[in-house]
Length: 622
Image (tube, rainbow, N blue to C red; front, side):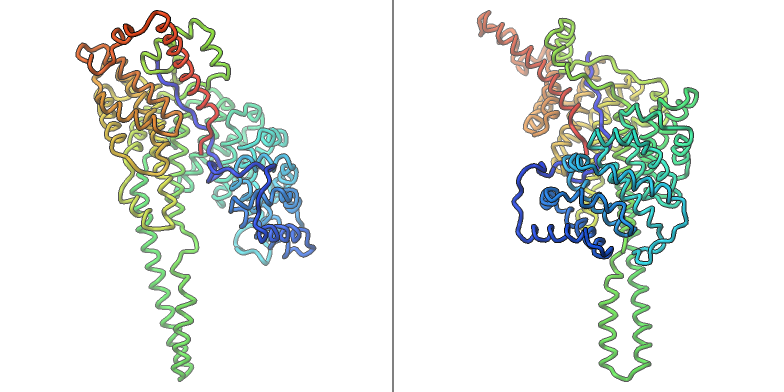
């Protein structure tokens, strides 16, 4: 019985809107005349001798480039080379706003813009800035007097912006990654990570960057010395008091997994166990209940703030009244106080919302890590040639398609990973995350505009859990999965899930993940002769939905699911009416026609297997 290929995720992508990539830089761009004039004016102001003017221009560009339609116009005016030198400006404020503008440009512009930034040599001033920041991180430099937050070290703020730029371009561009390796930038990023006790924001940015640059980058392993590995261990062993800290630990766990070959052999089992412990703790959290809890906390905080504001207002009114007998002046004072204090009802920082977001992102990252742990190596680019030329692959393919439509090599886990997955109940916790999102939490998000951004994150966690379930089913034996009864319960759950969940953002992504899980489960059940829980009618209904999807993998999965079901039904004696019987069909065609049909069938099967391997190798995930 062939198994479906385990899915693999790339490191988390930086762009919040990667699907809506900016047009290539070389394309002519139709600009509004006002936008064109404003862009020219701001770029001219970047050359001003006044640091205040340069700072204003950088801040304005930073805000504008969050609108993707204006990015091509700025790029055509060489905004990268205009902003680059300002990363080393004499004014610290200009450095920070210039770095912020480049960060937004790289984030909102996507991969094409990051490639253009590297082409225009952004790495030279960026690496120089990072080196200066690294030197100053441990100094007791006072922030500038015009700093918006005098309690924060401005060097750390600049470093945070710079590390985000570095993460973005290294995620996108191989040349940037090569420069990262050559310049030993990992030492700088590790230095930023060490600030986690006092600056979690900077540490999380550093952890994102580390997880990205350590993925499939063996050259970088040489730069991970004992001090760097100790820093990673310190983060993992620190008690997590906030969800932001849990997110940091999850990202660092991903980095440890990527560099596990650098770990001493005698400590690898303990390190893998520590990684799975972190992931287990993150997945143990109920995201829906945490959202409800955080919203209640936010409501209580805002109510308390409103009550305190009213008390202060009343005291101020009484004081004003004691100073004057002019009733009109008192009325004006009340109106002015009401106006001034209205903003107090809106939190300066949506802390509860941030914590809820941190948890969902941490769970998504944890599930992606488990997906990568439970997968085989990616296929080679010439696999299609192997399919076409090898008699042995043809034999395996025929057997595989009969079982479910995919060629697979045997899959196995190391004993350390296998034990850690089971000891920390990872399969059970992944299964829990595939359930329907909490309806009460969804209602909170739908009826509060600031919280709506969590809806996509909630469903993304479910989608990742379904993909993770597919890989776990492909890698673990039935006993490790809980036995026959557990598989039957899972089959019933998936049946309810795929035939009940009709809405939600990114429904095509749901179909891809759900169809992968259903396919892997049907293969496992069929291999052991366990009764199928999905009826042929249900299978065909689900397959039809997948075939109509725009997602290629969902359509391929549909073919596999139908193949598995047909193979199972063919072994039963009462299913003639359900199948277009092969013998009856062959009688309608001549020998020559049957040869042609057999060739078409064989090539179609080859192409389906090839299409899936290529699609999964090149597809970028958000």
